Image 1 (cartoon, helix red, strand yellow):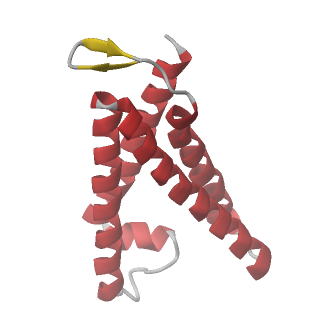
Image 2 (image 1 turned 120 degrees about the vertical axis):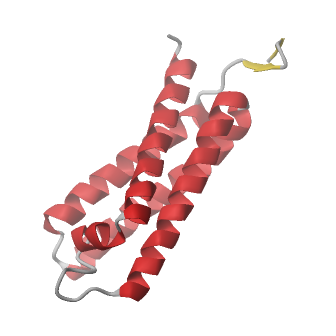
Length: 141
């Protein structure tokens, strides 16, 4: 497998992970927000559930569309995946800044920094590894 095909495969896998995370937030916002410390069984916060579901919908739609284009039009998909990569890397940077300024990284936050950074790096791979693209069965470089 070429490095370009591997980068596409890994980016699609990262899109599946991001979309799955979105689906989990959409289906069970209280549980997922509870993991982040935003809601618990004693103090459920329905307005936050709506925000969580909205974020879940964003994750599903954006990652699903990027995966679709990575498969059918890799150059467009690579640009879309790069935009998602910037968002994931921004989330990692925001968490790192928060951990530094607030002084309490915690196990969840430290793991999330690593997870966000790895997803961001993986999504950026096709953008920097452009290969041969096939359109309508004709090889176009």
